[in-house]
Length: 402
Length: 225
Image 1 (cartoon, rainbow over the protein chains, first blue to last red):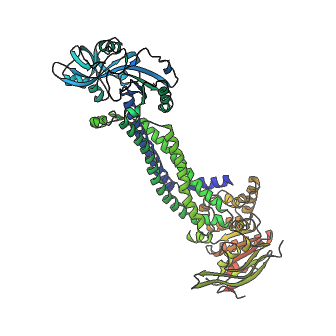
Image 2: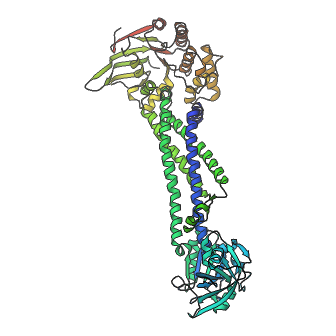
Image 3: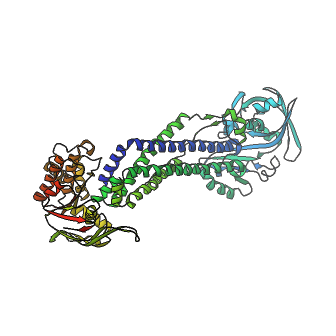
């Protein structure tokens, strides 16, 4: 019986191919549109996350006590601690740093910055890894030179090989002042990094400040969702230190991240909700045109449930076809704009929001599945109304109305 | 097997509201014996079609009882009425009412398919029925590719292919010219005589009446003769 109903449904879809083609086209555009919009929103979300995590935060950061309230060199994590607890499969990398607010001076200008002592070989998951550098980078942990951002260099009116003075508070609150020579100037995806961070070798900064340890250790996990597992574990094992995640360190980005996550689902609901109303209207009209035919099927002995099944199958076939084509069209479009949409015209604005100047789409499989399942469910819901219309109309009325 | 094919007892059908009732049928009682070929005749609005619809279980009488063979239609649910129509009745309408997306042979097969008959058997029976009505060259034609007369013959083939007890034909010649009507009536007669199908046809076409063995005259919803 199913075969009969399927045969009738397929032939009727083909018979009304022009009408069904238009309905199909509308659904394809909607589903493709939602998919592209979602991919861009996810890209934006990813951008926020990456921006925040690469901004020397990592997924989880271990901080010396009081660093959250009083960043500087007064409190530090002892270097001789046992770090074997980081040998976990979820932890992809961990990076110790010594970091302090400081003032940097050239012969012409003075700026407030953060001086960061790094071990370049361990900076595999922060923005430092992808810097475009004029001159040379920090060679190793003992390097006593500075790597500064392009914007800061312009503001200080300095250049490679020039000498700058860095002034900061030492661990005992006594000012430390030291001269450094600029070894390189970096260009970053955002001016925020270029203005805020001045990089030097970790060991050399430790020697200079007399701090035999780190102010922070940044952890990069293999998956964002692992935070919920790893953070409490480390907090238990390191009770004397602060173990915080990126959301606590960057609440604004965290909120933006959640907002976009929510927006993605709102987009699906709004687009598909609108679509379903249009679909119901189109399908009811399509069914009314054939109401006599349905009446006749019932006259000759086709049960109402089979008639309903036929209408539902027709709707679901159209919806499923449109879903597949829509997703393929969406995928092709996302592939076409895979390098991202250039937002350099709005660079200052987007950077202020913690985004890069290029909006790159990002596909999340979960959205793919939700969109697919929601479309099929909506197809079923949409088919209910024309099907109900058919069986609520009496057989004789159906024959007369045709 | 029942003694009669169809029996109605004091069947009344009222349309409209309680305050302004319109009587389509007023206490119609009739018996049609097995194998009869009966025409229900009368002017427009006399209740011919309503009587056929009530007998076919397409609408329920306001009062009275309808029996088709040993089935009392008033006791049947909508689903059971559908089964009665599927297994015991065949229908031929003025507008042919074939399924436009199916070929002639598929249209005839359709009833058998609903009855759950195997593919081979239904194809054989459908082709046999179509051939009996001179349509052996039109098996694969769709309704839109056939003349009115040819479509009506497919409709008869569909109506008789499952060997129903009763065939109901509502103004079957209304869209046919006299030559086609004559041909059509001969096929009805053939179904009646060769297959033993009881036929009730609502008509006001004298040509059709000429082929039937008994006329039931309806006037204002009542049997006049």
